[in-house]
Each structure stands twice: as C-alpha cells, then as structure tokens.
Amino acid sequence: MRFGLTPNFLVVGKYILFQIPGWAAAIGLAWWASSSLGLEKFWAIVAVVLWILKDAVLYPFVRTAYSMKPGEGGAPKKGAIATATENLNPEGYVRVNAELWRARISRGTRAIKPGETVEVQKVDGLTLIVSATDPG
Figure: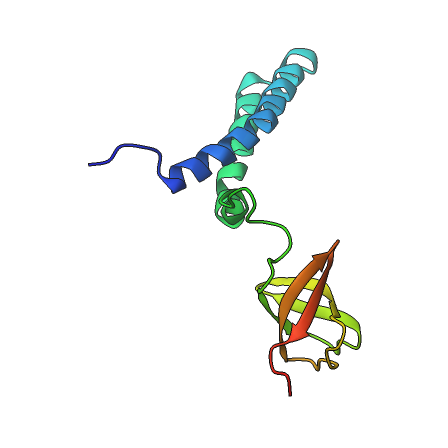
C-alpha cells in the first residue's frame, strides 16, 4: 500500500486553506457582535457554523478550479483544436473546450465559417492566431 497525499486530498486541502481567512473574519465578526453589540453567543456560533457550511456546500461547484495544476490554466497551447463560433475574417471568436477566445486567422488562411474547426498556431496576448484544419 502506498502512503501519500492523493490528488483529491490536495484539492480539498487547497480549498480549505483558501477558506481560512474568511472563517477567521467570520469568527472575528461574530466575537465583535457578541461582545460589542450584545448578540447572544449561541447566535454568534450559529452564524459561524452557517458560514462554514456555506463553504462546504459550494465546494462541489468550485472544486475544478482548485484542481488545476500550475501551467494548466491560461491560453490554449499551440496545436489546440477550436471551433469557430462566428465568421473569422480576419477576427472573431472560437470555442476551445468550454472557453470562448478572441481569434485572428493567420496570414494566408482563408476565411473561417461558424462551426468549422481551427488549429491554434500561436497566442498573441489574449488573441489566438488560428488556421483552418481543412484547407478546402
């Protein structure tokens, strides 16, 4: 049996580490409300527990963002395949996986119609330079 940190454990750990400042703020605010405003300690504790439960409920919706490895995010790499969502003549938008990117066709490439697939040749800032995968 191999011991070590599993990827899921690391993702949960990263999520918890990012939540700690919010939890500390909630605890501090609850303490302040209890000592300065006269809020009953029971309700201060309930508020903190609800704040933490909120983070637990939201985790399934945001876990993919925490599971990304360094260098995974950002612009698509050269050779990535995208689908044009509008005419590219010379600029428009393409979809790479679930993301919409501004794109410009490379020199010497024909205009691209919506629905056609393109290949990323280069990234220029936040614009993808693409060419048609089908030369016809």
